[in-house]
Amino acid sequence: MKRGKKPTRRQKELIGQQKIGNQFLNPNKWLVRQFTASKVLLIHKETGKTRELML
Image (cartoon, rainbow, N blue to C red; front, side, top):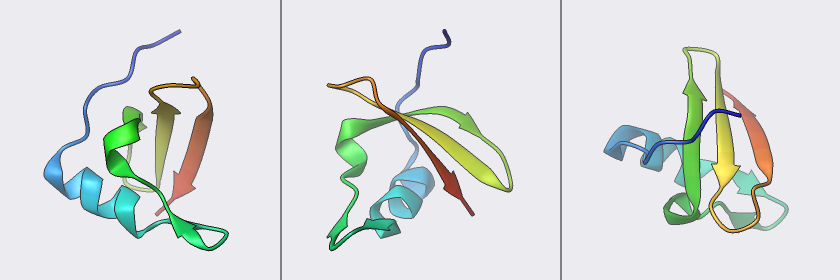
């Protein structure tokens, strides 16, 4: 399994804008596994849960 990397400032802004339910994602708790023009694959630091965001 690939390891995630710390998000850049631009990636943090994109992650922070994503709303799940009534809360926004905290970019400090997510690592970026893959970043393309159309999607972002994230890994949660504590739980290991993965999430795919469409841009």
